[in-house]
Image (cartoon, rainbow, N blue to C red; front, side, top):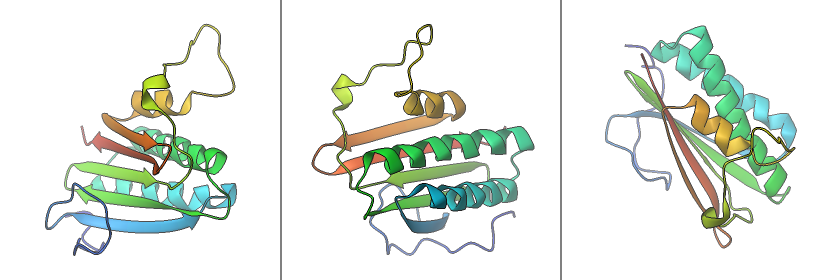
Length: 152
């Protein structure tokens, strides 16, 4: 089975929603642009091992880049942020979690695509490319974006 060389979840990291036996990789990286490529490369390798095709892998890379870029733009530069990749036989799950300023989800609106702006497209793009997306954010605890893509 693809993905067999990854570590098996043992309950060491404080992320929710994992089942015994799922394969996962955890990263903690500086909130600076130069490290986003590390996350993109990791996503690409894991998605390839699961069996996603080239176009699906590109979609996953764009979605994870958008989530990471949001962290880089909106967090404290001296902080690290955490990424968890969850590999199943026919699905990838990616969680991007920071301890930044967060935002009020009630104030989020989808972008006006007829009048595009420089900001506010990240979550929209992620939701467009992935099969399921969950966003949790508060000004006290930062933002967590969970995204999932199923193998077709």
